[in-house]
Length: 345
Image (cartoon, rainbow, N blue to C red):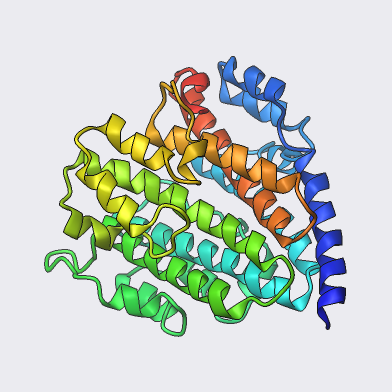
């Protein structure tokens, strides 16, 4: 398939993603959720939302638990991904496969947490659509069933996460790695693979726009990590190993300046001097993570309303996943009798 044909298919795919975006929650919808008092009220409201109706239908029978709610909204995100993936061209699918690798990373972390601290409720086997389970190179079903660290490692033997997992230090008492070390190592491997692909593997249309969108998201994650590392007074030489290898405008030089800044206010000003960081809101009372979410919302909405190309699809899937995260936070707040408004930023 030539680039002209790929470009035409990408435009059609991006138009579909833009149409899906129009079904996400409005500002008025979010205000209504912020004023809710029960989880049942939230589930009933979602039944009237085009983007989340299927999640509400999955929750109509049975106890309304954290695990079931989180699984239901995740299925809505993955279902949209599956619709878009099926109509993508060959080159676009190569890029979209990295989203399935991210899903596999999350599955690894769920498996490790389950082994360390068995949950009271079993994981829903149907969270991931058949597309995810059937893609070559993935072992999601084996990860879901894994009961030991050895079984997790065996499930990953042929994938990109095998080496970083094998390199982790294990606690001699538990035979398990540190969860935080596992997250750091696996995320670094994911973004290293993604960076390599974007630099030398992806040759489809809108390569520059797509790379910028991917690098922006990595910058936002690194900003969250940087401010967290400052909170714990991590030395710069150690912090370098805990940050993602993919960079946009938040370069390694910027990261070091942030870590060495006298105060958090000075650190944020250094970040705001970069192209990515200038989207961080000012006079913001929430956490750094909430600031990052606000910046991502501005950036990816801008991409979504820009030229129709694969970056629009990436923007939509990012925005839907972020909205799913917001709904999960609101649900947990309601479950514990808290105001969801405090957790929706």
